[in-house]
Amino acid sequence: MYSKLRSLIFKLEPELAHNLTIKALKLNYIPPLKQENNELLKTNIFEKNIRNPIGMAAGFDKDAEVYNSLFKLGYGFVEVGTVTPIKQNGNPKPRIFRLEEDNALINRLGFNSSGAEKVSSRIKNNPPISLLGINIGPNKDTSNRINDYLIGLRTFHNLADYLTINISSPNTENLRSFHNKQELENLISAINKEKKILKTNIPIAIKISPDISDKQIHETAEIFLNYKIPAIIISNTTEDNRDNLINSNKYQKGGLSGKPLEQKSNLLITKFYKILQGNIKIIGVGGVDSGKSVYEKLLCGANFIQLYTGMIYVGPYIVNSIIKELNSILKKEGISNLSSIIGSKS
Image 1 (tube, rainbow, N blue to C red):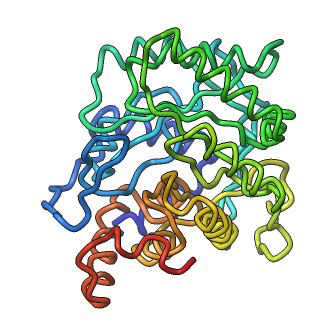
Image 2: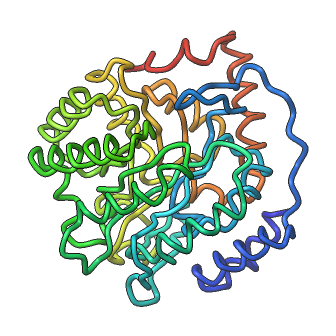
């Protein structure tokens, strides 16, 4: 049914279509499907059990409005945000562009957010029914970016199951400088110090850029191991990978997501897995739209998966279709334990 509706939806400006989707989920216009009990896909993340390793990536539910509706669509976990300390509008519109022939998006949203206070109030009034992550970032005009992350930590440490430190959006100027060794160490040290003050054990994930060099891969991996970071998210959108795209929007400024990011993301997962060797969990993102694409990320070394752009092209019931195809692949390959294949291709 969605394939028939998609042509109509795609006639709308992308951000308007997104806002209408959020409203439809809030009003239950997109009914949930019955979720079958699947023992093979049950897993554990941050010491909590979830029904499958497929999550919604940050960026879809920026202001924490529909996470429970997403759980009812089959997601094992949901990450909301990016949330900034103070409300900000983000970059000027238009700022989202579809690349239909490429099954991709380019966005330069720039952390549009309702702000930490409003988002925290919303979560308090609507307790999550499954595992909820909150992605935090700094305001564009802040004078102290590390302090902005600490505000996010203070606000959400008792509301989230984990927090993601977003250092990888290409749409906030110089944010990716946190991939540099000293800046990253300063940030993680400040977060750990604040956690002790707050007396919280909230797990921290760090979301990284797909555009980092091999030197940065080794440096950041060493830091993550030294500081015992529980999880990293690989990866955010890319500023590269444009030359082979078809759609005329391919040179729009912003981060590219969707199918063209898949191989770049998978290669980065493989490189990190070889260094981390299972000591840090990897959440794989980029080009996920099928059971096959999930299977490939698991083989590369991802323990868990997130998607966003794939839902735009496949539809709201993408998790169900992924699970059916993934089960078929696992059965065909004779796999009875999902953890046994993680990193087997690396």
